Image (cartoon, rainbow, N blue to C red; front, side, top):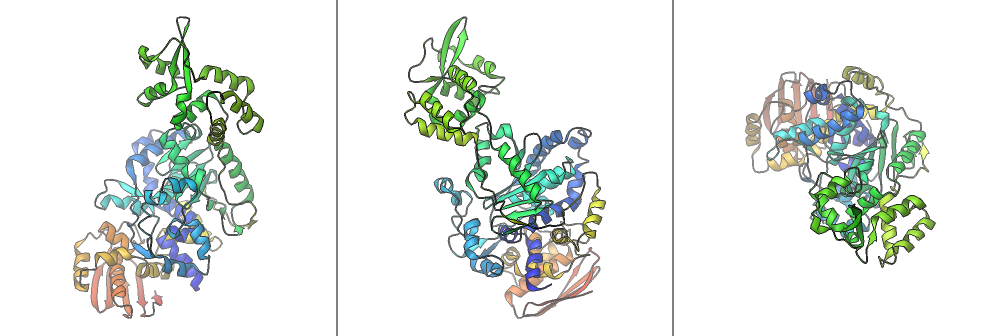
Length: 574
């Protein structure tokens, strides 16, 4: 590999937020690594999914949501994978992308988002505010093995992962467990978030551990409002799909043009809806300050009774029933008689009359004439009627800031695997197309396959981008580090001939002898960068030679002779 190729391939090992931004094909390589993993395939045999055999993909997806919520935690500890520096990362990628472009699109390099994010102090919310100097965290994405291994980490009761890890997990699980074709799933990355659009039944968005249907998107609840944050307020940096990707900065796009145009149409449809009374109720649910301008009317033995809108929303908050849907009457039945009055409340708009107007006029708030008619209707009650109408229009219609369609669409080899394929068939297929598909080739590096992949990227990552193990060993001598490694568990979090990185061993306190040897090498090189290191891997036996000699036992069955020179050059001999 030349230096640029090596940078890309070693990034497939560590998968930081920055690396995926610079090399967008890595995102789908991680998805394929998760699909190759045996972990998600085992979920098919879990009772809750076995019971759904023969049921629709949609029903399985809804069950998958609950499974992921039960089994995975959203991890927002930015220092899980240690610290680096802005200068170091910018230097790494200066051949590929300019510092200005990175600063405009990456949260760790100055990106703040639009005015909304300034108002809510989003950097403080995510814990980014304390990184106001050159030091920044590695914001790394985890494989499903690393997510699963959080169960071994102190303070965690379940598996865990950050938003990009969860997005990749959802794609793989939707494909394997729910049998949803990969062609129907689009990954959406923004500077502060990652989610997926699943093209089924009007569209479904994944949002960390949750799923958001179109109905849920417009229900006005706090959870739905949070789910909308990224697409409302951020520029989308990457869209990726089995046919390829499109990037906000790069002129070339490898995604199939027709697939991207289809995605834009379907997402736009998902993000837009018609103005109805239930939708209007959702708007008021989301904008409580406007509730005081409305009242509801009910018939009581032939006589009208009136109720303040904010009182009914208060009842709804603790009820299983909802305003303006099929359970509306049941909600009204829960309201105390004392909250109703027998006269029309002054200074309030009647929702029943508003509904008649909406049905009669077919008001479309995206249409300027209709917006003006609605403004005139509410102006006698709401002084800033224009602002109200503008906010209502914004509620029912969102325009996502997607990468431009004005790209040079390159012909690329799409990933073509079927929901009917077995895990073994998929792995064999991906092996066969490695020479013609860089995404498939990189997938084996993200998968940590050491049997059929070049070891140089793995080794480079192990001794250059694993600060957690260095910090944990900081107070120990080399011999004490060796003793510590001997005392922790010998089990690898990766099966077969796949290897964890040093910081995975350090974080989860478990690792095969070969993985421990690389952790030891990382510590030694950090302490003395001029030290030559040799690692001899002879199946069960691993010997590390540096300032001293350290022996480990491995169950990986691999054979290599590795030399890391004082200059950092890596030589690997079979």
